[in-house]
Image 1 (cartoon, rainbow, N blue to C red):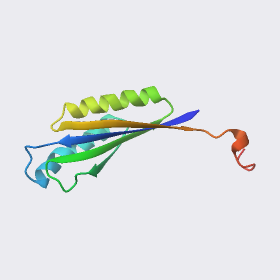
Image 2 (cartoon, rainbow, N blue to C red; image 1 turned 90 degrees about the horizontal axis):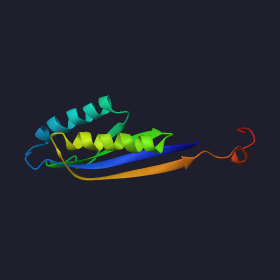
Image 3 (cartoon, rainbow, N blue to C red; image 1 turned 90 degrees about the vertical axis):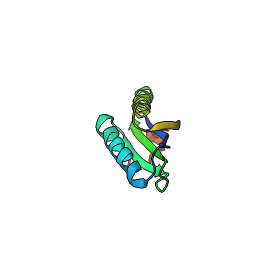
Image 4 (cartoon, rainbow, N blue to C red; image 1 turned 45 degrees about the vertical axis):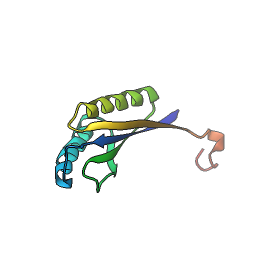
Length: 109
């Protein structure tokens, strides 16, 4: 069985925002809503010192790649319907295969 790791990078644009405090008032509740609504982890990864944009990384892990793609599609739609504009987004999915029993050390097999 394989483990699928999906990371959605989303760059949010807020050209009408003029301070970090104003941006935080938009981004912080958005991140909290994502965490409550979807089975994902969310991190603010870039643009922290810029007042008009920010990049989020949204991650999920599971055994079903199609289900992860579905979750990430819904996350992206949710973000696009929010207070910030989605300027760019890209999805990275990595598949980790379980090692075969004969590839494990003798004490783990």
